[in-house]
Image (cartoon, rainbow, N blue to C red; front, side):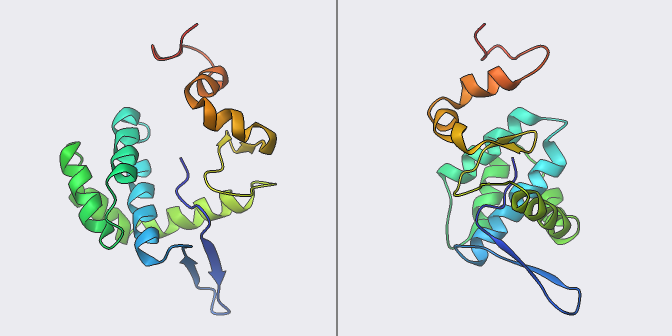
Amino acid sequence: MVPFGNAEVYRHTTDREEVHCQHGPQECLGNLYEACANHLLQDKDPKTLMNYYDCLTVNPDPYDMKKSAKACAKKLEINFEALSKCTKHEGPDLILDYGNRTEALAGRIGVPAIAFDDDFQPKEQDAILSNFVNTLCDKLKGKKPSDCKN
C-alpha cells in the first residue's frame, strides 16, 4: 500500500519539500500514520497492517485523524507511541518516497490506483476493483494464503 492518493509534492527553491493533500491537512496526517504503519508492520505483521488500513478507512474522524489512528491502534494492539514517533521522524521521508512512486505511475487517473510491484495497468483497474482478492491471488508468486482458492 502506498498512502499518497492525489496529494502533491511542492518543491521549494530552498530545497524544502512540502506535501499538500487533496482533502487537506487531516488527510495528510492520515497518510502519515498509514505510511508509518507500513514501515513498522509490513514485514512483521501484514495482516494487522491491513486491518489497520481497514479500520482507518471505515472509522475515520475527518477532523481528528490522530484520534482515529490512536483508536485503531488500540483496537489492534499496535504500539501507538511508536507510530506517533515515526510520524515526526521517518514519516515525512516515507511520504515523499510514496509521492515519487505515485508520480512514476504512468497513466494514473484516480484513487485508488492499484499497482502490483509498481506496475500500474490502467486497463486492469476495473477488474482489480471488482475482484481484488482474486486478482491479488493471481499476482502472488510462491505459496499463497488460504484465502486464495486454487
